[in-house]
Length: 336
Image 1 (cartoon, rainbow, N blue to C red):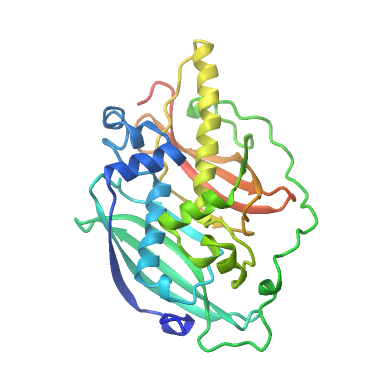
Image 2: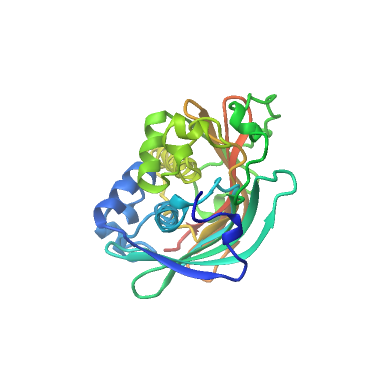
């Protein structure tokens, strides 16, 4: 029996744990794979950016937070994953050498009415550095198995991997969004970001680093879980979205340079809301990513606007597996 089950995470409880060092090598390695923006890769370029120095990708910090939680309690728990993240904010840059820890608050808990073997725990996390600065906050629900539940019958998902559902009706394709300054971007336009094939090898490699739960590590471990088959960590799915977005932007940037036009700077993201892992991403799945501009607003930072985008991932069966409302700073004309 695991040490931590649904019943052990009591509303109102606060706990701190972890000591996770963000090394320079790890920051650059993650950025090269998933988030190759200059302020994550190069000291001189980072000094000239809004971040003022080399810093970790936000997706790296979020993945590290997952590993901190795993090492502290998830490894010996009845964790069944999470359906998403209500809100995540990147409050301060994470620098090379920072040592991160988590402060977890249990905001609420309720037993599932449809799945008696599990409950939902509402968690608020703060990620702090060695100077006690809060560098990231997040609020989410975790699915936890209930203590002593044998259920009589196996949960449905244990019997076999879910069969593909009828293909979902795709969203109408938005008019392509061209790279531009804040003033040039048109709400409602978007971009197809391409497709990524998730292999078992890369799913396991990411999980070993950041989310080594059994259903992310092997087919055997996944077969005993509600996933039924080897599935990617949600943070892996999100990190790949980031890479596909940047690859698409890089192609647009090259086209602007080839045409002799001015190249707007991209800024960091302050966070996102309403992230949903709608369905598992299994080994062998092909996930097609896209982004649509949902809103934009001026900010108090001179020369910068803030954009909001609805971002999605859809599998080869037409099922949406992933979505979130993201935000990012974008240079205004004559700004920065």
